[in-house]
Length: 422
Image 1 (cartoon, rainbow, N blue to C red):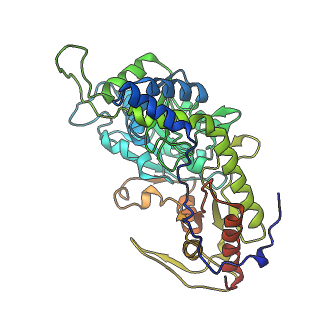
Image 2: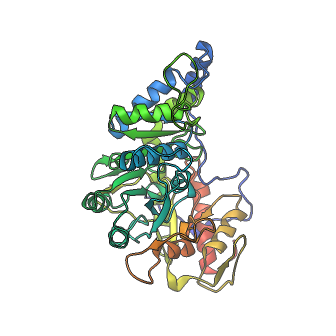
Image 3: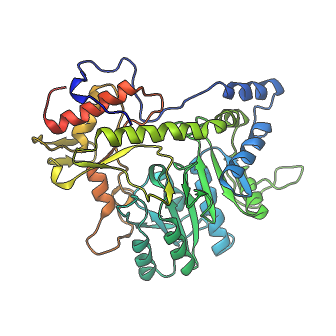
């Protein structure tokens, strides 16, 4: 790893071109498959691009069956619905497949992980994170089952491309006869004990949103093990049309299928997955090296077991190095102190360079829409997710960043702590 002469880096001017958090990176092959769809007139929700993407992603992850869908959120909805039907039988269309049922959900995540539970009439119970991966705490999950033994469904996310403690989570689910929906939207290509994330859930999903490790601009994939589940999801995602000549419907349906054009972009991106992961890993390591003597740590993972895809590089400021910070519903403020900082101050320094960072996801149990639902941590009074949200931030992680841009970002963060002009 090369060393950085931070003191010699001048940052008087912002970057000419904006540095994004994580933007799409195209390579050219994508146009070939888009053109193929145009030339053959397959510009609908069927076509060879969709067939190949379903096959390639299933093979990459190691699952036998897959369904290409319009978004990762659509895939999560179908996964939650399929799990609920398996657990509780055919739903009343007006009430949803989870009507009145509680579901254990990762707390530190984006709302899309949890929203499908409400789509199906369920009630989320939020499970706190642990500090070693920032993901669902197995001890908190175990405690939640003691409090709500009737729960039979868990929705787990791999935050920022870092695998959760999958062996422990899976064991807790199995002991309690619960199904696991694995939200691998951010972690495509990441592995745990040599297996791809997406292999550990009873149903799993990945995302191809515009900021993901590979992209179609949108799109998602449901991964499962049986023809029955695959066929059921395909039917639901095409408005639940019955196989008759006229339009006939026996159950609620959704317009969730992927476009063959979007699939063409994804098809052209798939061969670049490992390249993108390598680039993300270099970004993570460059930040880690450049910031190593500051009072902060990079987002952690289980070394020796987990291989993150490093979708986003993040930092957590040490408690004793936090300057006073206040966050309301829409604004944040802080009081500068020598040798200390906070996420708001660092994000301002990044923004001054014409670069994009962002706060850590605000935990679900702190969100106005979800604040009335239960929250379970590993011990009374513990709230690791809120602490990570308070002290953490996501750094620019775009694979098109230059080394010079990264060095200037690192220098800007150092200047905040060292109370030196930039």
